[in-house]
Length: 443
Ligand SMILES: [Zn+2]
Image (cartoon, rainbow, N blue to C red; front, side, top):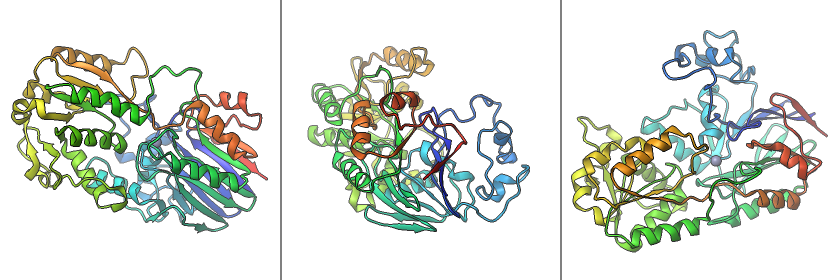
């Protein structure tokens, strides 16, 4: 009567798409895009043909063929007919692409539930022209809300992750509670939110737990700090130099942004950010709960404009805070600048003094043959930067995951968002080796 089918996030980190069915009620938990989506068949100029909607993806089984899920536009030209929605709702855990990007294919009549901050991320992404997710019937919730959908009742509970507005769920079904972790971490700065989720999940005495397992791996090759350690390492670099400091982090890692913002406040340096981040910040600033600085009013923030002929309307809003390469060059000792790899061309104009610092505040590359990583280091060497690595993961460690599962004590465990489900099985005899597309009945 109640079942789970995993259409993504199986043996991979990302791409979570979990179908929960209870009698006639059908919902998806997350509807994300895999990090390597389509890469086995499309590369470089050989891309999926947009005009063919989902047809090119269906050809290679890259998306599940589910009736009453996709929009008319996406189904045109495919062998599937567009029909009345047969999915009652989609519930997003947070605004990372691997959990939500494929809502762009979904029928706009299917409601999309998410936290308020998630909707702000989606809107900021759209207004800056970076992504299009389509028109949707968005419905926002907060912790403490209970949302009824057919025979289900969902309780979203905030968790700590590297993006604001991340939630786990306790879902009351006809066969008992199902809990879903989304992505979460426990090491700071808001670990108490995750603890609250764990407490509520435990109280629900779940018949099933769907858990992320990003860091469930035989060995952790990458250095992982806590956010406080990242802060301490970067504080030493920023306070201890009279040269330019350039840093890069994931655009949506708002905790990291705040770590660097606070360092600038403390040291009196100016934080030079790109218009894209200023735009997102402006959107998030409107959510008073998040306590984000206003990029237009905050004295610590300046916005870097590349030399180009025309600026977008959303960029122009930040003209009052505009600085350019010459400004950065002339004031390099007083600046902490955000610059991602794809904008490295700006270094040619900025002409940083040798011995400037570069802080790589994101994951280390997956492999030693990472071409972008090699190119990045070549550029940094060329300009005489000193390189620093400082990153804290957005995910719970292996040990924390095990502790969490023991504490919650579910009847059955469904590991997703992991490359090592077998490691759950080794530790828990009730853990499933989840297969993609297989329907798991719960009773
Ligand atoms: Zn995430």
